[in-house]
Length: 264
Image 1 (cartoon, rainbow, N blue to C red):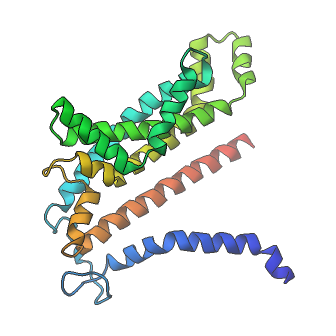
Image 2 (image 1 turned 90 degrees about the horizontal axis):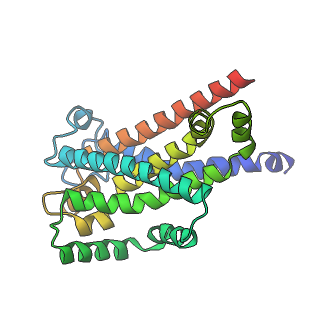
Image 3 (image 1 turned 45 degrees about the horizontal axis):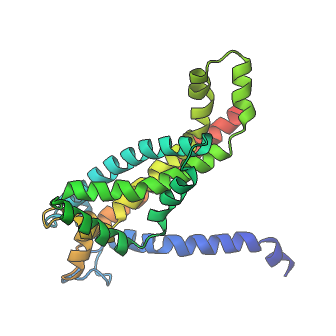
């Protein structure tokens, strides 16, 4: 019992990690499967065919390209706008600040089906045809709130004495912002950008309301393919995204460890 008490936290952590990662590992394993028939749900035979021909299924690579394009533009735009809003809310007092805070949280609290249908109603009322532009507008709108919240939390945790020390060393406000404030807020901005990209890339409900028949994103492609059998190439692309995310997090941890060792 004493051994179990000493390692309880570690065991629970490993169980939680296994619970989170198990679906990804199953997808990775089945990306090497060679299914018989249209369903890839039983293991048949090891094969590299899907990895060697990831675009073999019609429309899959164009849907991934569209999701990447919308995700990158939406995350960059939401990051720039969200960072500016976060600095305004976190550093300045102005009339309407409390109302702006409430409005920022509304897209996060609103169900996606409500947001998607209301945006579709708005676009129809304005006479705007649905397509990539309306998807992009919708994604920027709901990503903006997450960026603002993430960056604002980072700004709130900053020690104001650091900027005061920079001012005491004769740094101008612009120099203090560029050399002190911005580097300290940068992790929050990066986290907000990554969160916005992931939310945009895998969104289905809002996208489905505001897309045209020719603008099919990757989640929409998977949903459509599920009606007739998901091709094994979907597992390949999912595995690539998962491995890329793991590599990105690993590189970030290595860089953070390197900076800590340099400071020590």
